[in-house]
Image 1 (cartoon, one colour):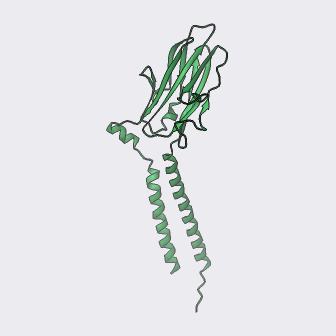
Image 2 (image 1 turned 180 degrees about the vertical axis):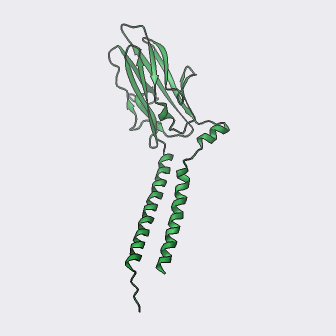
Image 3 (image 1 turned 45 degrees about the horizontal axis):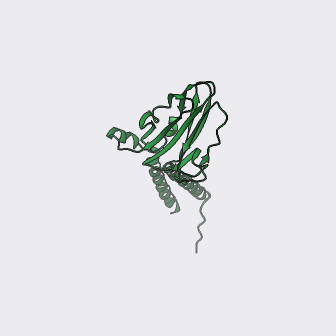
Length: 226
């Protein structure tokens, strides 16, 4: 029996082929992980509440895949009110105290609709009213799957949160103002559908190129074995 020992050049060529295949498979797995992460759309947004006399507060809301719309470990109760003057905001829930007033409220991720209810209270011993401003980072909200995110007061939309980043109003001392944040995915116009359905070409081309290159390398390797 003749034992044919591959030449050093052949061995080196095969090692290079194997290395390239491993690299390409790694890129393919990375591409799959990126796609998977894109589908898991968790997000966190902060509402900053300020007054013209330099009082401030914040509340935080968002979605997590393993959160519920009931009491869970992600929800953080709001601390008691300090001594006046202060501006104080909290999310309202149907949960038992102290989870009925939340500093941070996370809901389960949804591609259709979600709503947060929050209240802003202003107390001052020297002023009778203040211009209160609510601000947020619209770039964070644009990362969600929602097509409409509205800030509502008295059943009226006062800000479209995907295109605006603030809302100001006059608040009387001792009065609480109730707002809602409503997130919805609605039917889009044809041109909006096309814009929202755009896919990064990398996610389409990369797997095809990797498969083709692996095929070429395998064919080249098989020819060298003969």
